[in-house]
Image (cartoon, rainbow, N blue to C red; front, top):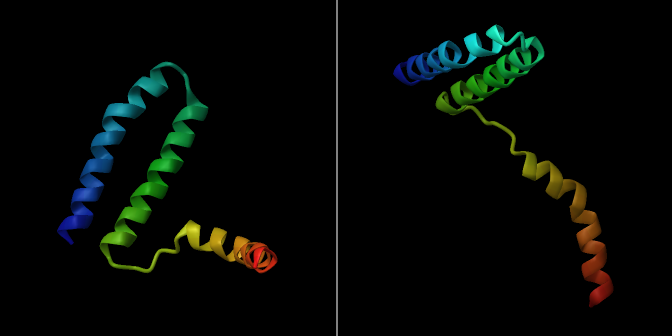
Length: 77
């Protein structure tokens, strides 16, 4: 519970520091991208703190390239 509160506190601090300059410079697209990435990061951080199983993108890459690797290894033997 305290970890989640800490994550939300840090995210709030980041928003307070970063969003006003973006809005002053009329950078609405950048503020949307910033908000989405921060929301994604906060969500992943909270999920990690709750010990949820988060898939690793490297596992998907390994699944895709494993048959190619096996083929190359069989050709080299």
